[in-house]
Picture 1 (cartoon, rainbow, N blue to C red):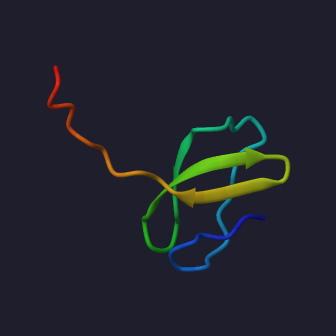
Picture 2 (picture 1 turned 30 degrees about the vertical axis):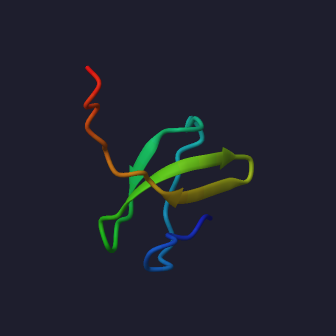
Amino acid sequence: MPKCPECDADVTVGSDAVKGEIVSCPDCGAELEVKETAPAALALAPEAEEDWGE
């Protein structure tokens, strides 16, 4: 089971998860991005950035 990189809690990732999917940590609420699916690996999701060019 992957761990939250923010608080080290166990995070459940569904078997149907895909790379790039965003999940939330059940303990600290951090938004996490699925980086790998087998085995599951998580990283902090990038902050949403405004697109000033459009």
